[in-house]
Image (cartoon, rainbow, N blue to C red; front, side, top):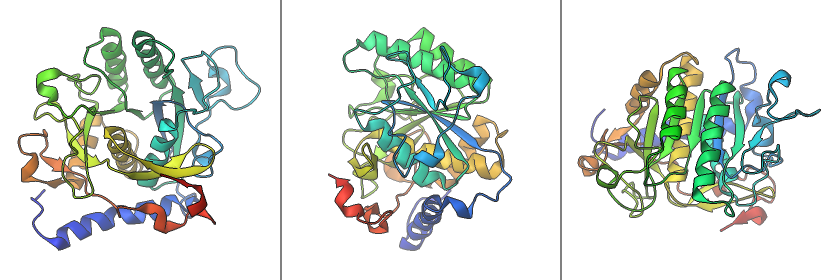
Length: 319
């Protein structure tokens, strides 16, 4: 990897990600591939499973492994906050994350396991227990990647043990560094800060490829930086819109990791996936004291709305 020093280098890097984005919008072009599906568990606020951008990318639980009492129809995940199969997204965050992942994965063979853990009416301790259950579920169901945008200041033995079991199963865990604008080396932020080989901790940058003011960082605790400001993606009720934060950057990296696993095969170990991810990144001297790899994933065009994914897309955009 070289430090970015020329417009040509930046342009070439951006072009690497435009093609996969376009292909992700036309999955029929990729369906002929014999490669296995990549299953991504999204532990978040749920997802709009009827969204036109998401509905064809849903994982379905094996009929003999339905969580709880079972169901006559396909189950695409689980709601741990209500212990039910209702994975609808009233918040919008999970749907937005799902869309970013699909934009960057660039394959019809990506399947999303929707695991709803968050309920604003429940305590932080309860939501943490829901997170642990979701990680255990994703591991049991043999997800390839876990995307998790939440976190907090305190370590949890149960949470760390669940991710450690995922590590033993070769599952990659991609976690947000947090949005407090502070140094995680000093204050800690978990689960991104657990010292496990399968965790990729992600900070966020703006449209000028500078670290976001709100993004946490850490020379020994945060792995990489990705786009996280005003990212365009799917929203509930078949809409689209923008969100900002390390959650969006984390989803960006998850999509790229899925792309790596799809091209290299599912058996590639997490450390090797990390190595290949860093090979896609660009070194930046401004990150030398902030990020472990000193590297960033450069961004696609700042506004995806030009693509006109569906007719009358502009009427569905929410700012």
